[in-house]
Structures are given as C-alpha cells and as structure tokens.
Image (cartoon, rainbow, N blue to C red):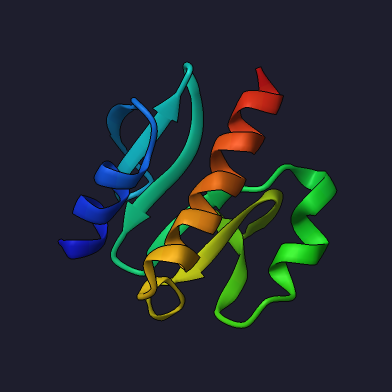
Length: 100
C-alpha cells in the first residue's frame, strides 16, 4: 500500500502495531495514527477535533457506533500531496505527545 510506505517514511521513529484494521503507529509510546483501507486515522485530541473535522475529506472516527471526539478519518484522496500528508502526521504526532 503506497500510503503505508509514505507514512513510514514521513513519521519520526515509531512503533508499528496491527490495529483498527490496519497498521497503527505509536510515537514515544502513544498512538498517533493508523493507515487502513479508507485512508489515515489521525489522533487530533478533543481541542482540535471540531476545526479538523470541518475540512473536506475528513470525517469523525466512528467505532462500534460511537463517535470519538479525539480522532478523525482522513480520506486517502486528501493525502495525495506530500505536504498534506505531512501536515496530518504532524497533527497526529502532536496529539499523541500531548496525551502522554
């Protein structure tokens, strides 16, 4: 999967784990993002959730019928540009580090 390789190359050192139906990345021991069939699941933290979910190609993460206010699904089409991908990864890494 191309997106998976791009995320691996762009993230700081991260531990990989299979979860959420894809490959999750832990940065400094905290979950930052996950690559799956729909695109990228990104940790936002609740304080940035409303701002980020309003962007095109971004939806709230829904798991088992519940919406998480600290995570968003970013559609793969929004991530075709390397700068866009880097920006979303920065969001996830910052939120993961803030959660520690």
